[in-house]
Image (cartoon, rainbow over all chains, first blue to last red; front, top):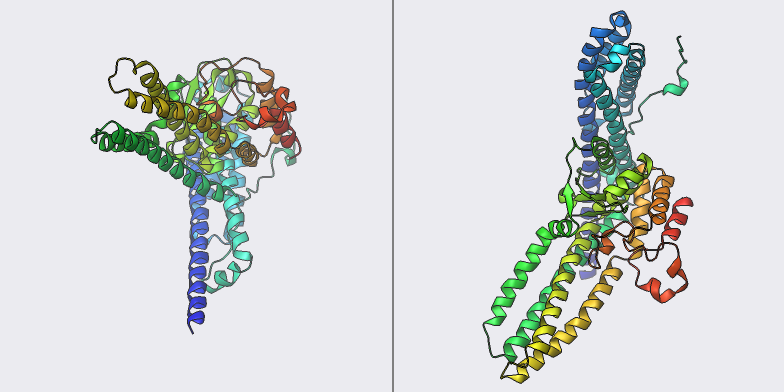
Length: 191
Length: 298
């Protein structure tokens, strides 16, 4: 009888340990996601400034400017709830972010054609801030994905997987920006 | 791996402080017995407790002051700042403060009691001689020390060992030179003996530093640093450059040598001590060639 009791107590203690471990990893994932959001927010804030600066110099680039503004509006319209990041939502979000990255990249490339713009101090600092923000998004993404990997591994390995389904823990989705990158873009050289 | 490393470091720090407290209070007990001054014991208890608390909260500042490091602002070197920020984000750590040592010998260390109070310190030589990728390699190595809580243990060691060697010096003096003008010869002799014991103890304590800051820790920081940059060649090339530079770092001393990414004395750099296993036993850092080799194999 006493042995049975000891075994039950041990099992309960182990279950508590596993449960707390899962909560801890899940919180790490959520925290990592909020790091990404901080950086995305920073990018959203920088873009209107960039658009306005470019507007003053490059009047013929209405199309590119519109594209950036629209891509930004589209990206900001998707609100992601970190507690239920499902795959479908994530795909949409990734696509919107990728589009924005590309539109901004195109705008910066267009700006190369305007020597006055390139000499503008405000533009230069915006450009370097944006590049820096892109780097930070990358870094935050890497940290998030690392945490998702650890969390998912925990969820899927024995014996944690038994508890995970019991307490309705679900795997999280990786954040891979759907950015085709400059290498897959058609190269547009103008003389 | 990293989480068990954190637990080990926290435990070792607590053990070290306990050992220090026991040592100082034990000494005070011996003294108060022999010198017939019972007031000494409570005074020593209070002083040593204050010293321990002080070393926990202020050792990073002491280390930075010892190294003549100055804090730099974002406006002074925004590129360095950004590099540190980006790598901290990737490591999931708060951005540490950045300090600069004005010395042309390239080297770097991290200090502080936890990631929230971490300080990253590099020499101006490192900043000038390394390119961006190499700099990223070094910074991510230091950030892994921050994330591992290696910084807490290694910084507190500096101060506690410093206090012990100070005490041993002081007691040797009282023991040898103070004896003549004293009526009570016996007390002087006891202080002298304890001084000798302490004088023997502090090199052992210094060796303990080297054991505590085991060379495995440097390999681990190299490896987890590479996990951040995903570019082992960056750190390998930085280590190669630092090894090629023969200039010693003037602000480093025996107490702080183990903090740096590469031994600031450059004694073990080019495998010179590789032949003598006894010499290697007392090295604070693994041979740099071995570290580069491991990085290249990643």
